Length: 88
Image 1 (cartoon, rainbow, N blue to C red):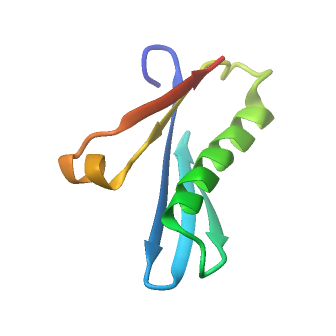
Image 2: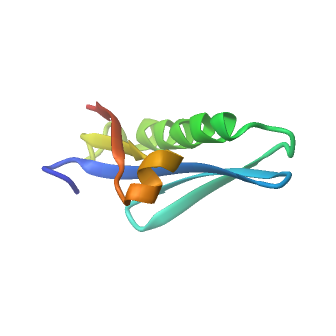
Image 3: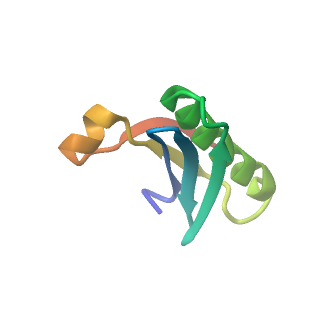
């Protein structure tokens, strides 16, 4: 939790012809495999969608504030995350 918000970390990746997206929240990973020809940008967007799906399941519970963070290649090399947006 970051300042009373549940942090959701997202990432998309492409290695040769394999593409996947993931989100990590509350000690759980959510992973989705994409078609081999998908772009890394599609993977990044899918990772955010995974985070939003999680929020949709828990938006009426005690976890009412969420912070979606993503790694972009430039930021990953620097060891930092960027805040995508905060959802209440």
